[in-house]
Structures are given as C-alpha cells and as structure tokens.
Image (tube, rainbow over all chains, first blue to last red; front, side, top):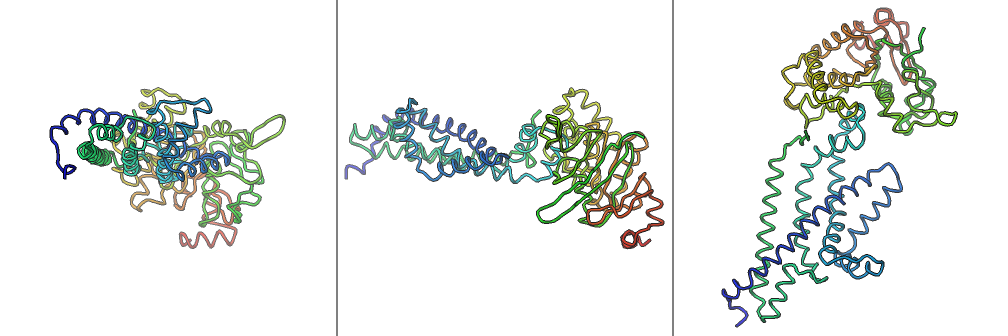
Length: 225
Length: 257
C-alpha cells in the first residue's frame, strides 16, 4: 500500500521544481496562443481572398493541419525539419507547432466571426472609400472580436492542456518534470497529482478570465482612438 | 451645354439568370436632382449601387464626372477598372443607405470623422470641426458623443446623411432613406435634405417611395419598371399628367391620383 501514502514532505520538496516547469508550460501556451491568433487571422483573411488560388490552397493547408495529429506535427518539425536545415530548440518547436495547429482551428472561428458582420457595414465602408485594411482594422474586426472570444478562449485552454505532448521532444514542461522526479525517487503519486491540480487550477482561472473579458467587452465592439 | 455628370451607355446588369438592365441608357446633368420611382425589383436601387461601385456591370459603359467609372484607359484601350481607379472614382460619390449602416461601435462624431481622416488625411481637429458643422446642419449637435444604438431611426438616418456629406461628394445617392423609418420620423429626415439643397448645389439621385417629396424636390422624375425608364420628365408633368399607362397605374396605386 506504499503507493497510496501521501508524503507531504516530498510534496513540498518537489513543488518548486514542478512550479518552475509550469513556467515553461505557461510560456509555451502564451507564445503559442499569440502565434495561433496571428496565424488564425492570416488563414481567415486568405480564405476570404479574391484570388481563388490563395483561397483554395489556404483551405487545403488548414484542412491538412486540422486532420493530422499534433504529435506528428511536433515530431515532423523537431526531427524532419533539421534535415532541411531548419533546426529549432524544443521550446521554439513546441510554440511553432502549437501556434500552427491551433491557428488552423482559430481560423475557422475568425472566419465565422468576420462572416457574421452585416453586409451593410462592408458597403458603408466601401461607400466611404475606406481601404480594405482600414475596413478590417477599424470596422470589421472591432465588431467581430466579441463573438469570437468564447471559442478562442476554449481553444487556448485546449492548447494549454496539449502542452504535455511537448515532453515528447524533451521540453522540460510540467509533465516531463513530474516524470523525471517520479523516476528518480520511485514516487509518482505526488508529482503527477500536483501536475493534475495545477492544470485544473490554471484552466479554471483561464476560463474565468475569458468569461470576464467577454462580459466586459462592449457589445457593439470597440473603436481605437 | 456641358457633358452630363453621370452617363450610362448600353449598360447590362444581371444577377445570375435574372436580367436587371439589358441595354440601359441614362443621363444626369450637374446639379440636377433626379428622383427615381417605380415598383420593387425594377432596378432602382441597383442603379445607385452600381454608381457607388457596390455592384459591377456586365456590359456597357458608365461615365462619372467625365471619366469612365468601371473602366480605365490602358495602352490605348479601355480595360476593367482596378481598385485604385475605383478608389479615385468613389471620391465623387456619397451614399445614404436605407438601413443607415452606421458603425455601431463608434460614436456619432467618430462615424462622421472616420473616413475624412483615414481616406483624405484630414487632421482630427479639422474633421471634428466639420463634423460639428454637419451635426448642426442635421440638427444633432447634442448627439456627437452618443452611440448609434442610442438614437431613434430618424436620428440615425440624419447621422447617415452627415457621414456621407463629410466626404464632400459632388454626387449624393440616397437609397430609400426613409423606407425603414416609422412614418412620424420621415419628415425630420426629409427636412434635412430640403435644407441641404437650399444651402448648396448638389447632383442628387434619390430612389424614393415618398411621392410628395419627389414632386417637391426634384428637377426630374424617372419612373422605372423592369430595368427601363418607362417615363421621365418634370415632376408636375409626371405626377399630374402621366402619359404612359404603366405610370398611371403605379401612381394610382401609390397616391390614389
């Protein structure tokens, strides 16, 4: 019954190590989210492009990324790309893989958000002779962002929960750290439980934060000064 | 006599299988106020939307202020206009929409100053000064900092007019600007147009169902049906002595002439 005995002394000993690995997990999620939002927006805009070639090729790229497992993409970037001269650290690879993978999902969220803007808004912008960039920047996106918040938030939380996959390329994130601590001390209960609790706490906090952002966001959108 | 400011030559426009204009010809002189009346689906709004470059054409030519709207000269011949040409041509035109299409996330003032600042590079101070003048003109000086959703339909449309005027267009297109309003709000919007034409010369093309207004304000009234001008002339002639049976039937149905 040794495995079911909770050792508090051991817990306090390993907590700082798990927390320092949590910083890596959070950093990968934060940078991955930023990249995913940028990529999602780029994919969404390319899908709306007037050029049929751009539109169709973006569609297939997005479908390809969404239809292949994240782990395969991580391995591909980490082990195959160096053969083409592109070599990245585990963290950079992880951020890039998460950003690209979730960018493909977010592009659909952004696309439906943009499609939700009334035709009249586009027409008014055109009648006022605004450029397409100003139309997106000042008219469309400020109104489209609020409906996009919940789904974007869900994907970012999902991405956070996928970060353990980066342990497969030796990134020392929370799960990898727990595995090392467990194998060195022959005790897995405390490190893995701590990791589970931290994932739960961070996910709940993020969900609460996203809800607050959505609640406080003006219904009509916002305008930059 | 100077060249017309708007000229449609053999214009063709289709929506899929539906032909809106098959061989449409139409002219508007500078500073002329032309009302377009007619049943739904006759192509009235499409005419304005083509001029505002919201709809393309499938054949023919359109000239605006002496230049081709949908075509541009290239190596000695005319080719379909690129976005730069359309951008230049749109500077001549301003449009007020049936459903206002105000930007709900911007204050009234910002709705009016946005385009002059972004498109024409007018300074914020100058754009705001002009917006205040326009808001006084449309009787909404106290609503500059309100948001569109806090305004009545009539007030929204008056902001729509101010917003179009802020770009100082030489041609103003009014697309059924009172059709989405409660009847008691119609006059406050029409009064703005009445005052406007008293103060300044405009080329104005208005699609309307307000027959008394068309009669009062226009230099010329055109009755449209099935993508063609069935009858046109001075308002008094059209409203009191229409020649065509189709016009008579329409006006009878509308105003019980």
